[in-house]
Image (cartoon, rainbow, N blue to C red; front, side, top):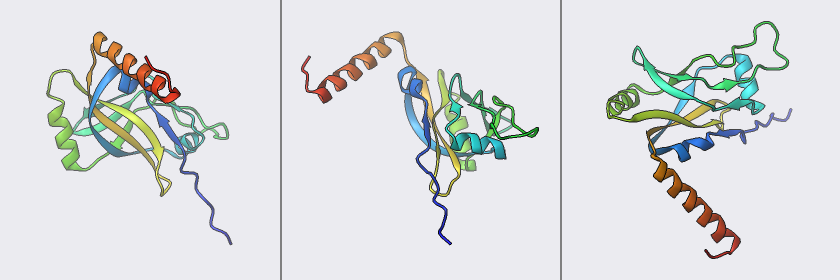
Amino acid sequence: MAKKEKNTQISIKNRKAEFEYFLFARYTAGIVLTGTEIKSIRAAKASFTDTYCSFINGELWLHNLHISEYLAGSYNNHDPKRDRKLLLTKKELRKLHSKLNDRGTTIIPTLLFINEKGLAKIEIALAKGKKMYDKRESIKEKDNRRAAQRGEYL
């Protein structure tokens, strides 16, 4: 019998993260999900709108990640915006918790993906908010990169 091939091409990116924040350190964390949630993620039905991370009782939690209800799910479907626990090592958690004490620093999720083993992982980054003039610089750099790829000169 042939081995069933897993689709590992699922990756949902938080596009606003790099525009709104300076991203410093990145970590890959596991995420605690229910059965219908992982099926919805494999169908690419997730959204990062207003998603953030916080520490509750020494554990890192993900808030406001919208994972749509699974269409074939029955009465045991999940709540789309429930809080989800992130799985990191104790050393990584201590390091992140100590960095959060800096003024203006936060933890932002940047990428949700399925790894080669078929497990859902989320990439989080330590971030600091950008000012308006920093955002204008980001737009200018992005426009210059696009123009260079098309062969135009500004």
